[in-house]
Image (cartoon, rainbow, N blue to C red):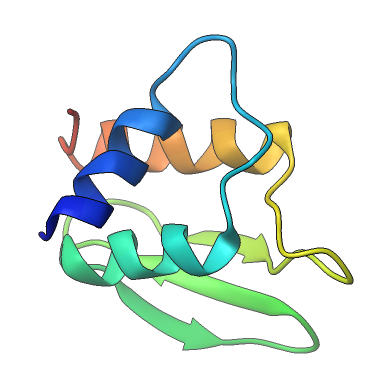
Length: 85
């Protein structure tokens, strides 16, 4: 995990939930931490860590920023995979 990905991880776990995290930063973090990402229909992606049930997310559009609900869902997924700052 590089410095930028570590910053994204810290942002995800910050309270209150930030609204300026770009989805591409989250995807980069997920891949760096060992997640397998597969494409779904439309803007959906499936994220799978070993030993953790898969999660489905929608890439945000038309804006690149991730909404608070999605950030909270990513936070839950990371906690289930024992990935915390």
